[in-house]
Image (cartoon, rainbow, N blue to C red; front, side):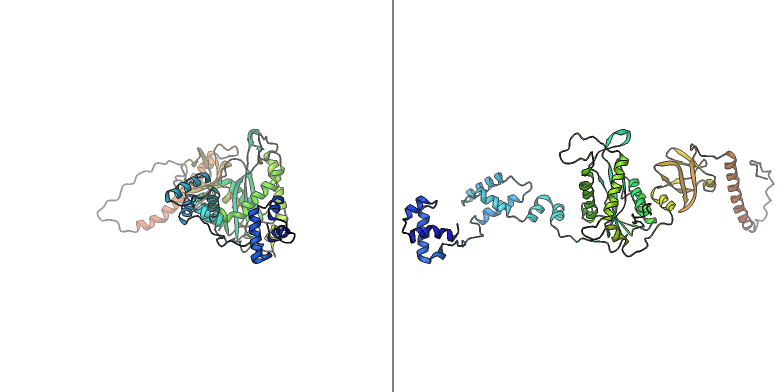
Length: 461
């Protein structure tokens, strides 16, 4: 009650001579309170009826030892329930012969603790860092300087293989500077290096849609520590394309916040409008869309996302990426890009009957000079009917599985390759024999008798 309200009640006694006992009966104010108001009025006038701050305002009358005991319990992991904490604090105060704190006092002491202090004590340094540490939001200085790539499992059911309900995954490649989506892929099953490679292939190469202008090779690819992002396949491919892979700190996803926000956007703006969405409280949902329909819906949403103005940028991601016009760094050809991204490198020794790999045998006449040598093969996990063979990063040939229906190798082809290889070796030997025969023959050594050579091959004349 304010001082003016108190005066409007008390003035009936001061000006109209209404007894205080009568005012106590007609109002909700006790006689003792009315007498106190009248005493204040007589000593200080109407102004004395205003509220005055207490001298101990902002301070607790609970002892410091009791407060310290309550705070210590509140910062202990696991923290006791508030009722348990009050019971323990009351027992401790009685033991020390001090005033027992009320339940409200204990609750006030607990609630007044610094939230950052509570998080650090109860949840650990990682939770404190994620919730309370000051962060610096970085942004690339230009398009294609830094790309982010990540996966998320979509909150929707679709018809997968064998018409079974499946919850698909989405891989996104985003330009950090423009927030533009450069490439994506939708798939079922666990994330793999191949799914990442498919998204990167679409992101790097030129699109058929002229409005989807984003392409080129980034300087940095920012990813997490997933097995698909730490694979040797991706590392070797990035090295050959001169892309630096930057892994975020384990347990600290803040550097990929932009792509995480896009995942939330596509979940709330697109998936929530599609049948089969796994929203809050959804039960017994059955899929309606097939895999191709979901892929088309996501592609249309990404095209619209790249064209609409971005809240932070003020312009669309596409316009931010195009900027004033510039030329992105591109691979030499699509074949080179496919050879690096969509094939996995392995080392194999060339046997006499070809290259043995995955229980199959690959053969090509060009392999004749490499029998007994270790070569590098690259293969597409989606189609291992053929492999690409490299010798010290130099392309040699495409070797085909002997069971491949298009294989047309005859015995004559093999014999021709063998003769050609032998001729090359003989020329190399003949080039070295004159050097060996110029050395001085040992004295008193009879020449070796001439032995007739056994003719073993047709070309041995």
